[in-house]
Length: 570
Ligand SMILES: O=C(O)CCC(=O)C(=O)O
Ligand SMILES: [Fe+2]
Image (cartoon, rainbow, N blue to C red):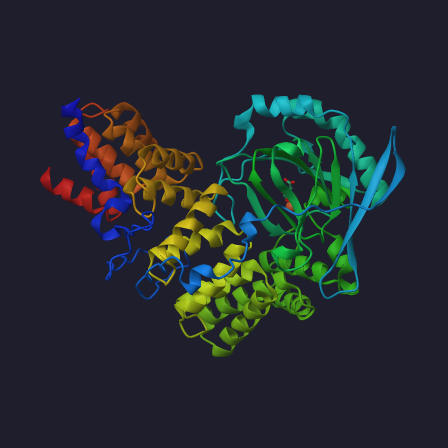
């Protein structure tokens, strides 16, 4: 055994964070009696991963923790949104309805649109489906149906599964279980919205501990109507589907959905999902205004409604023109015109998008006035309280894009976004600590933990590394491995590499090489180097100098220093 350890020792160096140049600060804040060193070591700059390219904060020293009893400590502490229980939406109106052969109750609710006279209406049909047990059983028995592919926006796995797509059944097992339910949903939707409505997609989502458990606030712009079927007992989890009519989290309320309850809303409902505790499953039905729209994958209702000037319609249509979606051509001039109209009506999503588009246009043209417009709109949305814009404004301050570079302001705005239960912003607060932007170590680690607990893979990886190193958290190899495994399960390549490394350090070289091989084939340089070493030393792989050289070369071509050194000794 000792011999194997000896063989795999170099792998330890491949743990990214353990390389001297990436070493984390160590502050003994866990020990109440101890104070941080008077002159703490400067944090090492870390390359741009995680934040926008070019992000590099000035190095600042972490401030010593105030001694207990000091003024700072005795100030009444504001309760964080992260510690408040989710607030529930209460339906007050209800009436008896008949949907085909189903008689039941329709509950109506609405929220006022910000800065507009209109309200957005939605409905809950309690117990539309008498039992969802067989569906839940099917989903539990087939966990692999859920995709671990990465979301195009935030690059984390989605854990979603489409049994029905573009008007066609894909999964016959689910067809058997859902066909009658879909019929019932459609009878209701046609009565309530438009007699020609047709189902476009059905999506099953899961939100499990350790996995992604939040979808930021958004519109379902591709569907005229969305219906969400509850599958999980709401007593067993906290949070869930929420409506957020205003720009900020304080306007957010959560829908209680018993298994079998249906919640129905239109394209202009600002909503999202955040699950604090427990596990939740849901089924989402996306419905268009005609069978033709399903066939064409189009959203014709926006063109029909455009003239009425609703800010949500203008925003959704602008997105279609910006990206050439749903049958519209890419037309940036038209997109800008619509975004401007929507932003002028106070639409914070439109304002945020304008901020980003104007910055892109500035980058390609060099026109200063475009950058001023970008900052104007980002600030408008951020000051209104919109977390996405606050995050973008923070990065603009950190990178000096259109604003004088200002780390303190970057932290202020990122903290505001993170306080709104934004898992990526929370992770970035941790990064800001690690990059020496003036976030205390205590606060930085707290944000990493919040983000990790909410399922954000990069934060899970980082928390794993903090436990491994005993940096900021007391060293705990068990917890380290648990967090690294969670991040690895969500596809984080560095975490997979380090889980393999931990196996290797215990002498479990077969398991280690297996993981490295998979990862190396996907192009991860640390794993390529480690696999090369495994072939070189015959650890977990037959000794094979040719294969060793091949993998080491692949890693070296990506600039991997260890691989370069190892190659030089061959
Ligand atoms: O899971 C849910 O309840 C809804 C998810 C959602 O909003 C979406 O998929 O667009
Ligand atoms: Fe949605």
